[in-house]
Structure formats: C-alpha cells, structure tokens
Image (cartoon, rainbow over all chains, first blue to last red; front, side):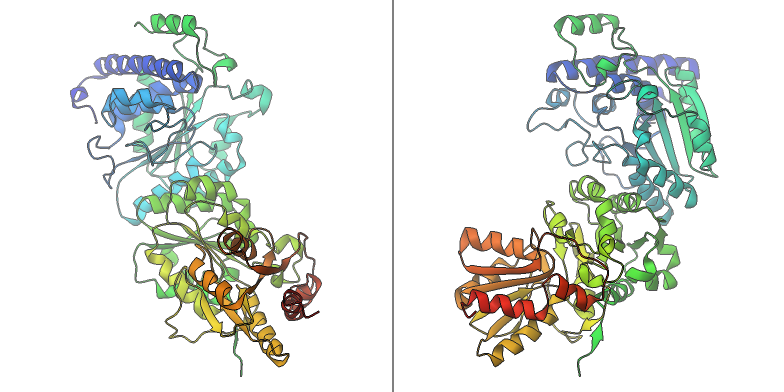
Amino acid sequence: MVLSRLNGLDDDDLVIELNEIARKCRVEIIKMVYRAQAGHPGGSLSEIDLLTALYSTQLRVKPDEPDWIERDRFILSKGHASPGMYAILAEMGFIQHSDLESYRVLGGICQGHVDMKFTPGVDFSAGSLGMGLSFGIGCAIASKFDNSDRECYVMLGDGEIQEGAVWEAMMAAKHHELDNLNVILDCNRIQNDDFVESQMRMFNIADKWLSFGWNVKEIDGHNMYEIIDGMRWLKSNKDAPSVLIANTIKGKGVSYMENNPKFHGAAPNEEQYELALKELGE
Amino acid sequence: MTELAASRDGYGSALLSMSHDSKLVVLEADLGKSTKSCWFREKYPERTISCGIGEQNMMLVAAGLASSGFKPFASTFAIFTERAFEQVRNGICRPNLPVHICGSHGGTHTGTDGSSAQSIEDLAIYRSLPNMVVMHPCDDISTEILTSKLLDLKSPSYTRTARNKTPRIYSKDDSRIEIGKGVQLRNGSDVAIIACGVMVSKSLEAAELLSDKGIEAAVVDMHTIKPLDEELVKRLASECKFIVTVEDHSVIGGLGGAVAEYLSENIPTRMRRVGVRDRFGESGQAEEMLELLKISTNDIIKSVLEIKGMV
C-alpha cells in the first residue's frame, strides 16, 4: 500500500478515505484542464475512482523510487485521460502538486498525453489508442521470465477497444496465459464524437472478453466498495488474464459534464470552472 | 567460385550466436520459418514468443519487454512491419526503446509473390523516425555481424534482409563491419557507386564491366542507411566527383534519398539514383524484377555512363 496511513483501516473507513482522495483529484483535474484551456476532463473524471483505489490500495510502487525494477506496472492506455493520472501521481507523491501546473505547458513534465520519458511514475508513453494492452503483455511476459510476482495493470476505455489491435492483444494474453495481466475497462459510454452506441455498437462487452478466455467481473466504477472488491479480485486470479469492467459516468462529479460528449475533450469556461469547484466541495 | 547465401540466414545465425545473453528474447508473427528466427525457436522455445499473425501486437509486446530490461528481436516480412508503423513510431521510437526489428523478404528481389510482398518503401519509412537505426546488409555474414552488434545498441533498429541467395561478399573474420560505417569494397576514382543489400553484388559486377570500358568505379556497401556514414560519402564525392546510388527500393527516401540530401546540403555533387521509380512491381523472378524496374546491372552501367556524359 502506497499510503501507509491507510494500513489497517476497515473497509468502511478505507472507503471514506479513498472517496476523499478521489474528490481532491477531481478538483486537480478541473484545475489542470481549466488552466490549460484544453485537455480531457470527461474520461479523467470517469476513471479517477478506479485509479484512486488502484494506487492507494493495490499497486506495489515506490514514489521515491519510480524506476524500482520490481514495481507493479500501470499502463494508462487511454492516455488522453492524463489529468486523472497526474492528479493521482501527485497525491501519491511521485510528482509535486506544483508539477500539475505544467500540464500541456512547454517544458513541463505533464505532457498532453502520458509519457514515460517526462513523468516519474508513468510506465508507458500513450496517446494513440489501442496500444497499451500489447505493451502490458510485454511487461507481464517479462515478469514471468524474471520469475517475479510483479503484476501488470492496464486501463482501457470502452471507445478505445474499437481499435482492432486490442483484439490481437486479447488473444495473445490468453494464448500466453498471462494471469499477472489485469485490465481495468473504464466503460463511460462516450467517445470523442458522441456516445459509443452511435459510433460503433459494442453489444455485450463482457461476453466478448469471456469468449476470448479472460476472467470477467463487472462493477459500478464509482462505488468504492465494489471497486476495492474488484481490485482484490483482479489480483487474486491466478488462472487467466482478468478484466474488471467498470461501468462509469463520463464527467462524474461535475453536473454539466456528466454524460455529456462535449466534455470529452473540452475545458470549462470561468463560470463553469467556478461551478465545478463548488460542486466538488472546494 | 562465388558462394551464394541469403542475408536472412545471417539473421537466424545471429540470434543463435547471441543466445548466451539471457535477456535476449525473440518474437515471431507466424513467419519464423521465413525470417529464420525458427532456428532460435528450435533451440530456445522458452525465449521465443509467438504473436500469431498480429504484427501490431508484436511490436508493442516487444516494447513492453524492452521497458522491463529485455532485448527483444522481432521479425516478420518487411512489408508486414509497415502494417505496425504507428506502433513502431509511437510505442518504440518515441520512448526510444531498444527493440530490434528485422524485415525479411524486402525489395522487389523477393520476386514471384508479387507487388503486395515487395516492400520498396520500408527504408524510407523507418529512416524518417527519430532514434531509429536503419540497416540493409548485403549478405549473410554482414547481416550476422551487424545483427549481433545490435545487442549493445540502446536505441531501436530496423534491419531489412532479403529472401533470395546472392553472392557472399564478406569473409567471416571481416573486421570492417560496424554499424554506421560503410565499407569500400572496390577502389576507383572515376565514379563512386554506393549500394546496399542485394544491389551490392550487382554494383561490383557493374564495376568490373565498367572497367572494361576504361572507367574505374569505387564501390561501397552502405549497409547502414541511418545514421549515414557522411564522412565516407564526403570523401567519395571529393575523390570521384560523380556518385551513383543503387538500391532495391524506391528512389524516394531510401539510400539514394539519404545520400542526395547530404550531398545537396554539404557538397553538391553530380549524382544518379538507381532504384524503383515511383511504381509497384509484379510477379516475376528476382532477376526479371530488376530488369523490369530498371535496377539491373545494365541499368547501373547505363547510369554511370550517363552521368559521365559517355552516352
């Protein structure tokens, strides 16, 4: 557990703590996107409860030694949702809160899309969709070759899995029986142009992963009890790669952004910014 | 008597010769029997990763392995590496991960499979990517030596090998073969022929025939397209005044493009590019392809005579 203060808490107290961390991260997400007047708030807000639980309770990483070879790997394949990742990295101590001001700024460590060459704690340079799972397979195989117990977690978006290469990777992960590979699928039902349903109907996503031989579990991606259970389930599976399908709300926590395709990749104006902070309890 | 060998065999041999490095891993996309990574698989199946017919996945699996400290060598046909271009660009070159890609069956010389399999743009494509080293050796021995040297390279690379047997140019103990250093195979001061891959032996053949006409051509094996051996090109331009590049590749962006870019900016020199003139090939034997696309020995000779104003 990265945050020692969470050690020993029962689930009720843990959920209270995690929800507060996620709330603070949401505030930072809004601030980053507002300052840059660009970026992707919707997917950052949908993923942040998941990232909060993953980093706070499960991921074996060392913020003061980000390149620690035996760390678990986390790959944000939906790399445009970088404000969410930067917020949690700052909360965990990989980067400073002041670094968040460098989001999308020349010379900054917080690039528009997450980049392993710029930000401590980032394991994969993303930005082009559908690439993270294959990279994660490489990390998972490396762990096996090293006889290590390090796990690999990959976050994908539901729009992202329209990329055909993801299905190449799904086949390969099962073929190589990578039980140390874990996908968290942020199903926020919205992609760049519109709702996923209107762009490319996905039908039953869980059935598709099941038919590829993966372990599948569906949860409410904003219910912290279910998220904690889901993370434990991911780690405990030792027979096949596993996917946690998290049903989320794009823009979660800011009323006018929720379920609104306009805020996939748009910044709030001043009035909207003030409203967002107020709604987030700032 | 001239010995014949295919450069792809050199790739297979190199993988075996590097097997002592426990971090070496080999990736295949259902063409191991063709690229010759199958030789490694036979001896080291536990370190050979099958990616099925899925090149996009393969490139990024290799990237993930490299990020974890392994030394991945991934191969398929040259043409199918191009399918995964963006994976190579964004997932390998951008983070500068030392993934070593081998594209076999490159060029029109691959022959009867037809134009879908004849990559004539791979060198140009990969040369355009920052951090990428691009090589196209001329025989099995130089392929084995150059591939073995990749083990210590800290950046990604693309190596094109050829399907068909061509004359062996080097002997096994040749110490001149270094990444980024062209090898002068023949001396001459009337013209310099700079070639790569299967066209090196054709260039040597052309040089002998030119000698009969009283023209002494220097011939260079420029196996590394990027980084280009600029010092050597500069010296050849100074000594010979005329340069002809020869490649089984488009004249756009490959060896000819690289040499032309360097010369025009630094030491403007009369030159000709022998290569494929912005068209696709078709099914035919290797030698027939070279004739059809005007990159045969006779076409090299013709270009030299033209540039020297002798026709």
